[in-house]
Image (cartoon, rainbow, N blue to C red; front, side, top):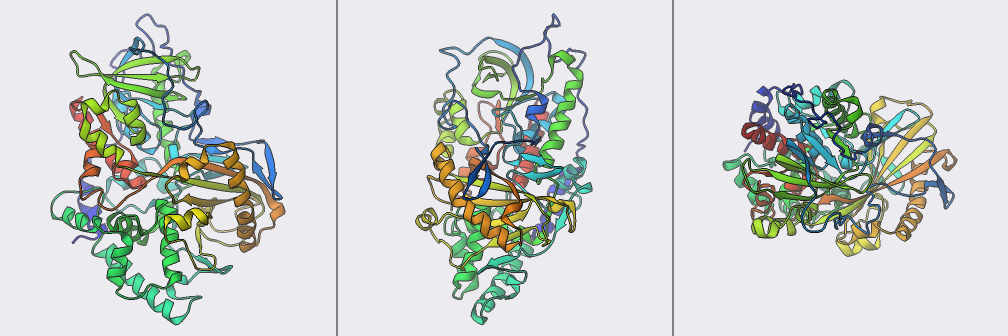
Length: 579
């Protein structure tokens, strides 16, 4: 059995031999304009609006239990729609006329889509994002010079000589990163315990169980690490074996001793925060793929993973240097919701991509290859007659489940006195252990220093705390849709904000604003058996005679940015070979 470092240092390291530095080329053609020289009307949002990291200034505030809140969510927003599933009815019958032909269209502007377009930039890709702002769950904001994440916060430290290291360095992440190499502190009964996983703050029985648990984690990280994405051969057999039981079952089997409530709470807190699902729900393969990887430190960039999104967006924006100034933006199409993708009969094996622009107009183009980098529950709505063309894929997609998530950023006019990255909040040490209990007891699982990458303390007077609030029950994502639920969640959050501020010795009066971000599709659930029964392979398989490719975190039903990057690399190599 390979350990994580042996695997990444050898197998995927071969990918780093492929040059990533590419320049856009136009082949002498005028990109973004018709043959007559007129701009192709695409109806995209401005560069300023589509940037993954947005500056915020004066935002309306609403007082909730004495705490100032921004008056609505950031993150997922669906103006004019009750939920993200239906497509706007922009055409009846046949799609609109085709206005342009391109090599590659990418549908979805999160990390998966941005990476796919970035790696294909020699083919002048066009990338669509339904919201104005790119970045998906890796969007960010900047307040008083402090960048912070609205979602994804870090990556696992890459190993030397790997594709991940290469692309991180190419994006400049290594120059700005701060590395968190400590075990996460744990809050228990109102006290922050730096040495919880060394037995601090618990009785002798719990301390013995925690020591055994650490042995198990070390074993999984250094000897029995389950590699996802699959790499083929005997290594996959180990993943299949783990995938057929839950993480809870596997931990219980390996520890072979009673697991005290406080340790179960710590494990469940990590699972809720990372998966929006409990250890009793997720597979052991997916659970250990995350848990054990935490042993290898975390890279934290300014603004979390929005820094990565920003650098890819900037590289794609440079493709517009070949576009007449009056026709920009062209390659980056924010506020353009793709509503229909369908294969077109005739030579070239092409597909028509139809979108609704920022003005509500329906437009279409023709592409040789399409990368579907949006969640699969949207893919099945967007791909025309998918059930007729590929029943097996539709069945696999419909077996996936998702969970909702809230992230809250507390903007502070005060220094943060404790130097930490992530504190898990265990409260009284008793955690929900199933969906029903989680639904009845909704709370923030952990708090991050949103300005951690700025370096050791002090950071200055403007700071941000980032709170992670998963909704680990099936209809949780639907509770995020209506205005009444914003009121409910803000009222539930306000006392938690006060408790967390007290824990960190920050007065309530120093809160400038609390900004809640909703993610309706944040977490695909890595349920038991999805890899072993072939669902993941079916979900990610290209379709329509290799016209449509799929790159998204739900390819493996794992909310891991590394999987987005690795699958993007895998499929963009295939696309490049075929073009």
